[in-house]
Each structure stands twice: as structure tokens, then as C-alpha cells.
Length: 473
Image (cartoon, rainbow, N blue to C red; front, top):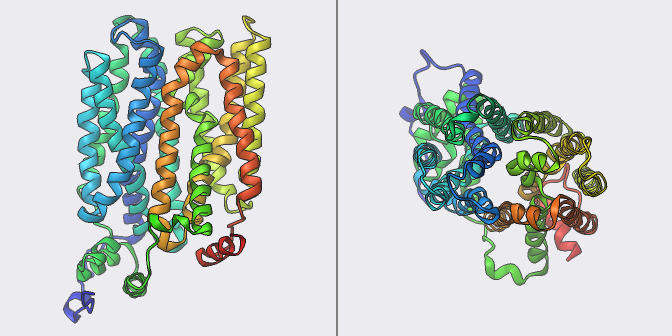
């Protein structure tokens, strides 16, 4: 292990013109979460763009290629989430976020000028690499920059920025779709808006510091301390610096769990639990609404322009519910909250299916479907969304977090991809009612699985959670 003693010269820093640590942390949080905003906008903008791509027949889309255009980003995100974390371990969090900002900009421009579906799919996949990388690196960067007493708030801010990005995408879709409907290339205007936050992300991150924990892991101890003293008061910086050194020494003594250890019952159980939590969170159909909400409302009876405006309600309730969920996580037990969320979305999915079947052709159906999708999003974004990511982080002990989170997140993205790819075909084949009944089936299976297998983790240390899994194996 490299010697991590710090000379007196390295410890003594100039305190003149020192930044205010709290204000600097706010700047770091705001700028870095532009990655989450881009994540949200790029996944949400397709919601309003697809009807115009198909309407004017510019990309020659059918039900399957519509799904391919929407889901190619998600497939890219699955790979981006795997590659992004490893690249940031080697190159640094800040540097890789800069790379992602360039990739966001380049791939967005490629989507805007795409002449056909094939080129669109290629650039959407590249955009997905940036989305997936941001989904892993931005929360990691925030966690490593934040004080322990503010870590939950700072990290979950990224989730809030994601749903805010989706909401802004729906607003832009509604405005652009209604104002420029006659231009024929209205979807290109919707997509190009995402270049603005990409440029802002690049310029913003260029002036931010690197993660002190990453610097320390590379032996750049003096640099790590300098960063800490710009984002903490002097006493806290010194105490946290000692903790970082102690953690580095402790981590070297930990035997990491590998894929070979999946034969061990408790390891297999915890990895399976993480993967299914991630998968079920997508298979209940959340992204059918986030990606295809406009088409769902069109299928129920709204016109395209009206559906674009009505879909803004979905984005708004997602933001409000996410804020409420962030508050409730600290007040309610995880298991109870997740089961309540799954029960809520399952009941609403069944209600949407029954409404689409019983009230087909009725003038009240579109308003009924809109009301129920808003209720669905309240249950999902208020419980399942934030809890899924939190639980996947909590159930894995330190020595298996890398492998466990990698498998769980990959499974989450792949299930997301499947929903995005096949939803238009399902809508065309078995209709709105049949599709939502299918999502409800996954919700019902999720309730049974969580009730039987998920232990309570609130208030427990990672070591206690690990011990509970070992005892039940």
C-alpha cells in the first residue's frame, strides 16, 4: 500500500479568499445534477416526438421500429452504466462527467439531423451510453462530495432532477408540438433543446473539483485534503480526511465477493433480491407512461395536441410525488412503503385495463385514463422509484456492492429496454387493456416476492443487514 502520510506543507493551506463551503456544495450539486436533468429530458422527450415522427412518415416507423427508436437509448444506458463506473474509477468522476457532456451534445445533434430510423437508433444508443454513465457516476460523485449528514439529500437530488428533466421535456413537447405543428420537422425542435443543458454541464463541471475520495484512492493525498478544505470547514475536513485514510486501509483487508461466490446461499439470495427489485420496478410499466404517455392518451381518445398538453400533468405529478417520496423514506419502514407502492400501482393498472375495456369509444375514457395515469405515477414516484435504488444500495454489504449493484442495475436497464421495445407492439396487438393487465400481473408477482423475501433495512447497518441474510440462508 502506498504511504499516505501528509507533510506539514501539504496540510497548511492558504485560507484567504476561501470559498464558502456550503455555497460551494450547492454549486457542485446544482451543476453535477445537470447530468440527471439530461437523463430525464432525453428519456422523456421521445414521449412527444414519436407521434410526429410517425405522423409525417419521415422515418418510416411502424410499431416495432417505434419501440426500437425509444428503447435503443435504454440498451445504450445498460452498457453505459457498466462502462461508466469502471471508467470513472480509472479516470476520475469529474473527468468522465466532462466526457459524458460531450457525448450528450454530440449524440443529441446526431438524433436531430438523423435522416432515417437506422441513423436515429445509432445516435439514440450513443445517447444512452451517456445516460447510463450519468446514472452511475453523478450519484457516486455527489455521495463522495457530500457531508455524511447531507448525503441522502444531495444524492436523492439527482433523482429529483431526473423527473424534473422529464417534466420539462413534456412541457417543451406540448409548447413546440402546438406552436410548430405545421412545420413537418417539429420533433427535431423537441430533440435539439437537450443541447442547452449539455453545454451547461460541460462548462459547469469544468470548474468543479475532483472527488477527494477518488484522489486519495490514487495516492494524491495532498490534493484530496485541498478539495476537502474547500467543501468543509477546517475541523471537519481534517476529521473526514482521517476517516478516508482509515477506510482506505480497511478496504485493503476486505476480501471482495466475486461471481464464483454466487454458489453461497446467502450471496445468491441477496443478488437475486436486488435483481428482482430492479426488474419489477420496470416491468410494472412505468416507462410505458414516461416514454409513450402521449400515445397512451391518443389511444384512449385524445388528439395529438391535446395529448401533449395533458401529458404535462404526468410530468408534474412525478416531480411532486418524488419530493414526497424523498421525505417519506426517512419516516416509513422500507418494506411497508415498497409493498404499499406496489399494491397501489397494481390496483391502478387493473383499473386502467378495466376502463379501457369497458369504456372503449366513450368520450369520458381519455379523461379517465389521464386521471388514473396520474394516480399511478403518484404511487410509483412516491414509493417504488426512490426506494428501488435505495434498497439496491442498502442490501449489498461493502465487499459485494460492486458486483451486486452491477447485476441489479443491469437487470433493471434490460427490463426497462424490454418494456420500451415491445410496448408499441403490445399496444397494437393486445390493446391498451391487455397491455396494462400484463403490467398488473408483474405488480402482483412483485408483491408476493417482496412480502416473502425482503427484510426490513431501515435503521440497520450494512453489517447487520449482511448478518440477517446469513441467518436466513
